[in-house]
Image (tube, rainbow, N blue to C red; front, top):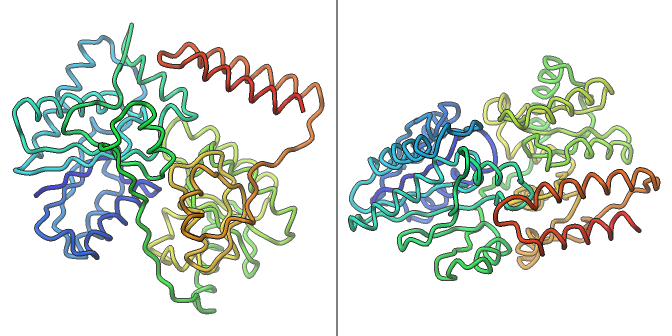
Amino acid sequence: MRIVIVHYHFFPGGVTSAVRSSLLAMKSAGRAENIEFVLLCGHERGIGELTELLRCTTLDIKGFVHPEIFYRQEIWPSREAFEDEAIRISELLLGYGKKETIFWVHNPTIGKNPALTRALIIAAQKAEKESLPYCFLYHIHDFPECGRPNNLKYLLNCYPGGGLKILYPESLNTFFICINSSDRGLLIQSGVPESKVFFLPNAISVNYEAASVTSTVHVDSALEKYAEKHGYVFKKGSPWWLMPIRLIRRKNALEAFFLEVLDEGMQILITLDANSQPEYPYANAVKDVIRSEKASGMVGFGAELVGKAFPFDELILASRAIVTTSLMEGFGFAFLEGPIHGKPVIGRNLPHVTKDFGQLGLPLDDLYDSFYVPVSENSRRQLKEKFQIFALHYSKLAGVRPLAVDRYLSKIDEIYEN
């Protein structure tokens, strides 16, 4: 059997971690025997390191780069041009089929490349028509329908006059994986047959050895050098709170730095910088504020230091706590990485994600569900108007039901009228 794992890229981050941990878990459980693994992505960064790491575990794995699989922001000049590219990508994918093959595709509906989304549908239809022994697994980490209106708009309007009409195909050889039970419920409620939607939480591996004083000093020294090189303030010897995230807007990263006010001397460390064009303006603004205000902490050291100067487990064990202030998560690694290393988690609870963890006995009592800040009447009115304009814009997207818009506006009224 061959398993072809497809993603836009294998940069450091949540999806790459999930892919790595899933394959290591399969290997550990003895479920990788007689399986040939193939990694496909659209950018060369990261795939070499990931392939080599997995190959060192004796997995039979190879990696290949095809730029047409990577992110795309521009619309196609015509429907014909869009379909032509989607067909080319589908043929590329099917070219990796070999006897029994599973195409395990991560986040194919997120709206980063509509041609890939369409190509998977075409490939599945062709495989079904020709009775090829191929299966297509859509591994959903995030939905474009959940807080990503620009992504959804791009999918529905990726060429003049139209775009994709089907994101979640009904072909017999296509199935779906959700990383939390809430998302699985959403897909089923939307009409996907229950038998075709699987709940597969992300695998996590951990080194349970306690951090020694020597290792803590080692991490401290490496972080100090990074801070000096990149213009951040880092107080060697002082404790820090770790945010093992990528610097994107929904992570609410800047707000986390306000926590320093609550604990004088505490520092905030954010592991990964932004890695795509739409994310850069917010990320650059956050970094500018951190540097200009001389806040204690830093951003983006993970790509340079983690796995090279020190392992990720050692970084967590040397931290005082894990912080999460995110507005929205798919799986929520941060909620687990603290407790399994014996570290507390500080920040905002996301019940649609953490209910799965709570059922396993993870402590969630110290997290807050919401945090209301006093705002003047004039500011409340201005904010409310902005959200109403957003709702009007969002309501024009195909597939957005009036009931959903009304429910959103009702919630806005509830927040800003109280």
